[in-house]
Amino acid sequence: MDEVRATSAWVASRSSHVTVDSSGIEKVESKIESIPKVEWDFEGIHYFDNGPLTVQYLFVLDALNFCFWPVTFLQCI
Image (cartoon, rainbow, N blue to C red; front, side, top):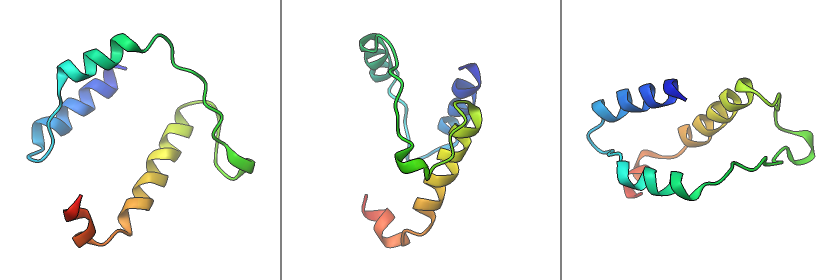
């Protein structure tokens, strides 16, 4: 978890269009009692190892999803 905080802090310190609302994070954290296991591997088409490689896979999948969006659309959101 410390690596997530460190890398998020690095991104936030260099971002001009992104801010982190620490009080918002604390609110959400206080409401989460436990993180439920999510079964998302629909029909076995997604990589899943129940570990860090699954997270890396999701980041790559998300990056590929956004890399094909036209710049004009991204400027609208």
